Image (cartoon, rainbow, N blue to C red):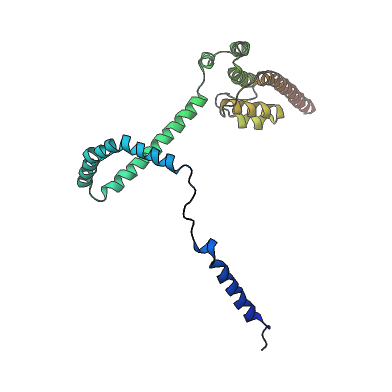
Length: 233
């Protein structure tokens, strides 16, 4: 079996050259001083911190923390600390969940103006929406326009109860792109805390008028179809 000529010689020469390069100054001697322009300032800050806070921290450690940990260790034993850590972790998770739920409730809580119109008729809802728009309360105006639109759909018999019917269910019933846009923007403003602009109020007002007109037209067509079917029978 033949070998490539000069292969071992080439490898040996490469190792010798690498050894010679690594034996020279940049690789065998470390710099006597590493540049550190902020070292003096940092040392001064450290000394000042130790001078100012060192004695109080040492006193607190010796007089309060060490006795507390010793007494707790004697009371709980070796496995007690694990129980304390688990309880602390569970408490932190519980507090986090409560804060999240509270934020969600605040985000979905109706305002005082909405509460006043909770049990009122269509005229009262429309007046409240117009007042909110005139005052520049864009978010409230959009939310009231949405409630007014659902109330009108309920009055027309399109949906059974606006308070128990979800937007998804209304969308399935209407199959309308106009309602899908109105519902999407309403959810962004109400639940995602997106800022409501004047054009959102105008879009909500005009969009609901267009949607209700389409719904009335569809209802008339549906009645005409049923009447024609009845005449054929």
